[in-house]
Image 1 (cartoon, rainbow, N blue to C red):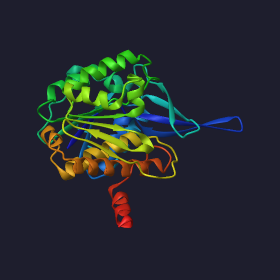
Image 2: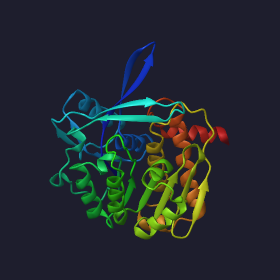
Image 3: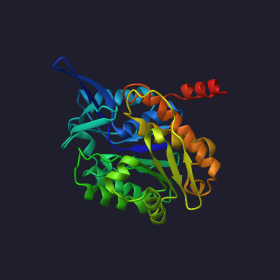
Length: 314
């Protein structure tokens, strides 16, 4: 089982037509999406985070339960649910505005950290919950505590609209690296935090600081994976893009799923990956992410959809 840690919120998609602004409310949040994505791909997943008792929080809890995500680690709070307003630019990329000060997803204290059973083989942490207090400090402590006991996966998923202080993002990123086995980072996040630095150079530095595998995603241009022994490139899928909301979350869920299908999810397994294994992981993840990009919003694919694509391609 994979324990996915972080925020769950509502995305309000803004659409202006004839001077009238309408909001289409959809459940979301990067960790929420990863948990759902794992469950839809047939990988047992649990969610650790704080959910509000308000209307939005009840909907989030109900959605996770419906998708088959284990909620035994989820917390309850009277704080309100974070709302994220999402507008799309001309290229279809999302631009976010967050309304989340003192919201439910931030209300995770050190004393709330659960004891994990042996059935949890991976802890996935990411997005702004890894940064903002008190939840950010709590999740960092969880990663430090569990590193070496189970695989730690991390996707920074930088959100300057939540915290524009990029130095804070860089510091938290550096804090996590010694406790991380699998690092997935988008080229966009890399360029935000480390403008002007070559991705390969950064990946080599990061590998020396902790992770066994670094994956840099490049949108439609595919992804590159780095280990201590190998570097492989995988092309992107050619599709008609509706938008890219949830693409990175889908990629991460699919990456973790495929790793569990072909290997045991562990640091040792990451260190032992051959180039063909890395290409297989990236290809599967890119295929899943492309399905999400082909429709509006974070509508992550189910395993049957990917299997059908494989059947058609053969």
